[in-house]
View 1 (cartoon, rainbow, N blue to C red):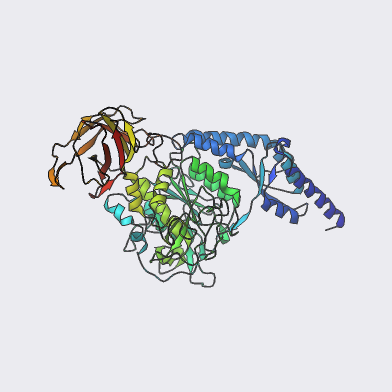
View 2 (tube, one colour):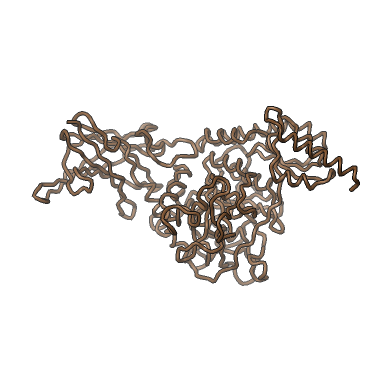
Length: 633
């Protein structure tokens, strides 16, 4: 290139950098670091792929949280309308610079385009543009070597069978797999595809490369050095989530769940940031009609960016918006362990559940990436799940003899968590995904050093323990240690019911000591079963007269057993994408049924302890925490 052209190019990009550094009030666009690096190496005539966002990302995130799942149809309509207005603001610019193939990215109020240096300099000064990102090319990273087969250990390791025996196999849950595609021809996967009931390319399959109208997978080498290690990556991931048992033993965590899929990695396993963001938006409104009735409950991302210990925020606004709309987002932690500081995006976003890998002895694998997170310094990964010696489905075109494969990698650990979320989603269809996520986090099996750490995160996923956590009654009032007036007190608590109606009743136990060895007798009067958002419900309480009497340390002890039976009506479900199920100032989460009972014949000056018990479908008793109150003398 001539010296004059080099000088002009240098001057031009100095202007771009200076403009991007101006205060927001000057309407200058922020230029992301990756794009700055590309610009520094470019020449004036180069066409550079960029993503331009057209509003402050926090505006979108706050808006998503305010809408939540209950009103996310309105959210999608507003996002699309905002994107339409933003695109209209840029129409003159696009026309003047001859840009005809710009892609609208409504989930982030953005637009993807290619432009030369002169056009990008003008774009950085456009008052409608907030941020410019480089639309990077992404490669689906190879997984660790295929591991030695050990069929079927992984599903029982995380307790999936236990939920199946209680009648929960993921029915009603929808998982979106963003990957290399999925082989619809596989006999273990075709029954669990949700199907295109709106024609080819409709609501259950998205292929921006237009390779096929129905789900197919692209073949890669799981081990680049082994020509026999052909793998349909997306097919293997989806099998762990929702495959059936054609293999001869169950392969999928949630075999009654339904999968939809987007091919984000095309030929040569290459993608771009704009295609990934487009696919993330598709998961919220697959058929594009503005209604989110066909949206996914869970989005599985068994991929990550190769830049270790770096927070690349290109997808963060899109994922925050999905989370605000009540969608769970799962990502592989990465395969760059065992060193610390090997987190990768998007798994290291605080809005994402990143999953590391364990073996059949519950040890973290050597390849599993370690934290802390490069984005917020937090624990990384959040959870671990089986990630080696995993038998799953393979693309039928990968082998003439076998449609199954044994794999290793955190891609497949992520699939276990997505399957676990689907199981619990099926068991509690009206509960916010954020509440279900929290249940898995707080109930995980602590491994490694005590407490959360940057190898195992919170621990190994334990699906039955998470189910128990969701069923556990949450005591609301009186507050623990309260001093109450009068000789009567109303006890109130909240509980969830799974999709089969369990728990059917609740039992209250009262005692004058914390270990309940001295349970006592009080009178109880029925109070209506109510909720803060209850509508038209009728409830009743049955009080068992069958108090047992026995002598203990010279005293007569009686047990009061109060059985609360839910009447007619359904609990009202609140919106929002958050909430961890905790009680705040005596109020129950909106999706809990709140129950209460009034106790009488209380003795002044006595401290009473109480707890609530419910039964699982298999008869196992789940107890609440214990609280106390004292009647004012």
